[in-house]
Length: 420
Image (tube, rainbow, N blue to C red; front, top):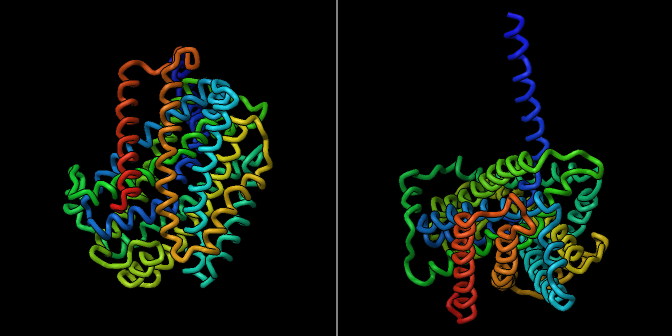
């Protein structure tokens, strides 16, 4: 009896220790996932649902599955090498190459921040009637305060604040579904892959461009290492990789649910309603269809989306600069670089939604620059050692990369040819 007890009692402790280690790993993917529920996603998904109903539900499901793969690859690269994707690029490119790569990444960061700041300014206008420029300044100020916590001992606090905002986003964007529940059978019809004309191809490419975010790919490889303070003992690589899989799946499942909720909400309650091609118009339509309380909750979700995504975007920009140019710029300086163009647009633009469309096209151009090097490096044995991607996984990765690049080329072509 004693012998039996001696054998069995350590087992629960082992599970408890593993569970504690797993809980300590979770967090980075939830910060990266904020990029997948930014105001650009809101605009794309609401427009898709209001215009085409459930037709493109399958696009979001496919995009989310691809995002899980891409974000895990970024986390894997950071965990195994101990370096970020921008750092590895900085090591392997010449001086001219590093500078050119940084310039395109910085343009992408500015385009990303454009959508996030404009979205937040629109939210403040909807909630409090503030002018767009004033709202943009407030978004910039609050997001800068959030960034104070993103390094050092307070990094875990930064993660918790971003996750809290992510939960607010989730509630803000799915509340309408409880007021007016959709028909599950109709939703299921949207899982059949199909298009109806070139306009739906353009919409699908826009949704993908708003879903796969270059700065989230660059940043995730940094987040998995910044998650641990200096001197803090990390779990072994196998445990980290397993924990990162769980982290990525749960985080992007949450982000994917939010995006699907937005599309389904629009398809169910706003289908055929005019004026939903802008965030402000969509909010007014939601308030008219589901009541002012739901409209206000939607605006709060939009505000949380803006604050969290613009903070994470600036964090990514600083890490890209550090990795490629080996320059440790103050976070406030990185914040100013991407904020000023957005404020200029808010001051002069008559229709900020048009600026969002242009920004989305620029964003799409930057996606291949992030995912192609990522898949190349995770297939490089000199970098990954025993954790290198095998030929089957590499082939799957290349199919995903090819599909994403092709859709974004279509998006850019159709937009520049005036078919948007």
